[in-house]
Image 1 (cartoon, rainbow, N blue to C red):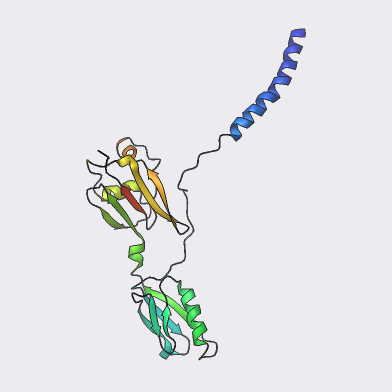
Image 2 (cartoon, rainbow, N blue to C red; image 1 turned 180 degrees about the horizontal axis):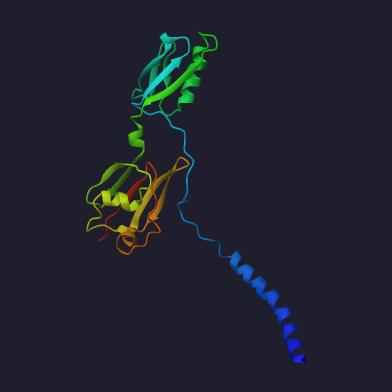
Length: 211
């Protein structure tokens, strides 16, 4: 009986210490997150590009309404107000600029801008595979496309490739970021941790071995 009491007292003293040590160990080992977050991403507003065809409609002023492509300098030409910057801007931003400048000539103009033909979009949304692959490619992005899909479209890697030094380049918040891709493990070992789902504009670079 005395022995049982002693053991109980010992446990009461030791258990809090063990619990504290366990919590400290957990706090010192944060969860390792994937370098590329999964899940849906917010869709950025479309920005007009060179060669896109835009339609500008000015309510009750048909003579001021125009439709045409964006020039290489990123501008369109409007009656009365002349050139307006459209490249790199959203349709709403272009409409606001035209509205402000037309207000010097027309009382409370109502302006709507829409993109009636996407041309630059086909380039902005492509996925590219470069480097030590059989056929470097620039292919349209498709929902669900992964690193492996794009590399297979490029015919796979060459005999001179260093597939586990592959890098995925992606624009994140306007800045280019590089993510390591262990392509050899994906291709030959079935380890798909870095077989990331691709986004429009991604670039996959497969380097050659260092001899």
